[in-house]
Amino acid sequence: MTRPFHLGWFLQGSSVQAWGEPWTGAIGRDWMKPELFTDMARALERACFDYVLIEDSSYIGESYGGSREVYLTNGLAVPRQDPAVTATLMAAATSRIGIVPTFATFTHPPYLLARMIASMDQASSGRIGWNMVTGSSDYAAKNYGFKGGLPEHDLRYDMADEYMQVVNGLWDSWEPGALVANTETGVLVDHTKVHSVDFEGKWYSCRGPLNSGPCPQGRPVIAQAGGSPRGRQFASLHADTIVASIKGTAAMKAYRDDVRARAAAQGRDPDEIKVLFLVTPILGDTREEAQLRQKQKAARAEAQLPILLAFFGKITNIDFANYDLDAPVDTLNLQTNGHQATLDDFKRTVGSKSLRQAMLSYRGTSGSVPLVGTPDSVAAQMGEAMEEIGGDGFLISTNDVSRRAVAEIADGLVPALQARGLARKAYGHAQFRDNLREF
Image (cartoon, rainbow, N blue to C red; front, top):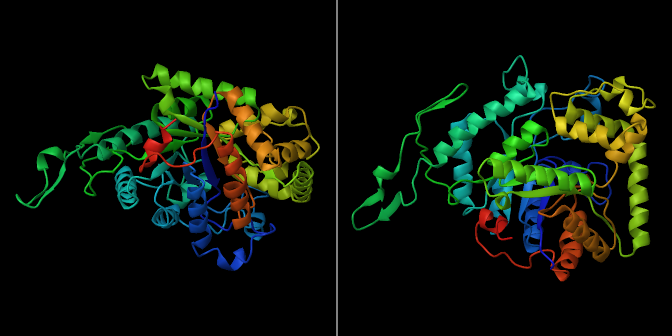
């Protein structure tokens, strides 16, 4: 029996999109304005996407050659605006799609985060999520006054478990029914249903209650990208949806099975966690056209190898300018206190390829599974992959975001998915979490 799966879009920050790529218009002049993002949100809502996730980082990269030059010259995640602003504007432009900004636990004290997210959930009528990250860059940490940089990887998750206790306590500090708004009695809020939190932990403390009032959803949808063993344990306890960057259907299935098993072991219903895998479909009116576009993308990637190395270095905090491009990856001592799962997947996938070959095959290809062809054939490929994996969906991610790129997905691929019964044709609910749990 054909089962629909979930669709999201992984937007690479509230930043200049696809500088130097074709079909991006005057992005170098227009990037400060929100129209691209609001147009995108409306288009994806017409296509009945579950959500748009706005990735973020709060520093300018300088991991490649110890310099900011390659990042600034090529617009790699810079300039980048605060996702709270973009998310609010995208939510205001839509009425059903979920909007998921990224905020790190070290950049926002728990009370500030809980209050901001609750306010956004109210303003969007229950359509806000939070992509919860612990941070991965010492450069970013130092921007916020942490002179020693970030704590060790697994310790960050220990701290994040406590952080979640605080924010969940704040969101729960207003009981259901606390807002009365009774004009006859004159009572706006039932004071007996609003409670202090009085949390005292090892790393965080908070008095509460939240003064913004409750989230329409109770709590916002939590997104997380835990890929390491410690990250998976965290995500399986706290997340409603998981961002997964895993190469190959066998590894994707193993990842999902592991997360679901961890969730069940912690007393959660695994079906309440939706794992979405990053993909980059390459579409054409014919298979030959799609294959030509794939070759053109590969040629651009080969011509921009330092950019690929710099971008991957920003994620992993590794200066790849220090390494021999022709050295086999499995002979290199690559370690990180950043995105460990991404680095581990890279090393697992590329094996003994040279660093040059590895970067082109890993960063220059189309996500978790290759998707190349007409909208209908790619829809079929996605359906087949999801059957092998077992669920729950895909996150579209591309380095050439433009109105054309969005239209190809929203108006080309999605109708093909809908025709096969693989994507919804209408939202079943008004709020984000309800739509996420619809199937």
